[in-house]
Image (tube, rainbow, N blue to C red; front, top):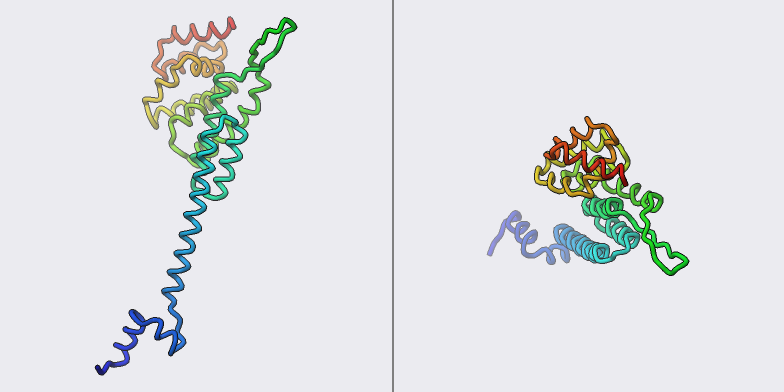
Amino acid sequence: MIQDIEALRSVLDSVLPSVREQYLGIKDDKRALFESMLATMRDDLQREGQARLLLDKAQETHDLSKAETFVKQAVELLPSVKLGEYLQLGIRHAEIVIDGLPLEISTEYGQTIRVYTKGLLASHVTSALAYLEEPILLAGLPDAEGLLYLACIYGYQKQYNEMLTTIDKALSVDARIQEEFRKPRKLEILLLACGSDRSKIEQVSQKLGIPPCSATLGLDKQLSE
């Protein structure tokens, strides 16, 4: 079959690239590009698989320092998970601050007393702020749960204005988070930022839909403790 030059070029470019490379010395650029893309995809999948394994380990361990190590290793392999995983680390540190970290002291009579100290919580406060502020404030991640815990840390630090702004953001993202703010221990933490200022207490109460007298009782309980 007689073929013109254009028809021959079309055949060599499509179904006979190996003949073109052998006799004309023209390499198959598309094949090389495809192989390069395939190799890149394999590497990406391998890194993602390793990162996911590390993140599973981070979630399974109760040792928060180990969890942080696993997460940071995973972030190096898969940077896209950074904000979400940092948010979870921040929440874990904040939970320790909210619930309190006990220090066990043995008495001379063999009794064990559990004492909660601010000194032990200081590093967790710092870590909670660092891990929560980056995704929420710097990256603008709209996560109501993260905002809830960030507001509680601000309350613990007695940063009233920052706490109030964060509460507003959390409610704007998901109004249902109001129920979490009302839980006793979290509410007590938020009231720390109000001190004995009744107007501040009422302002927080209004935002969370709590009768002012209930919040006042919470404050009186704190002062008595």
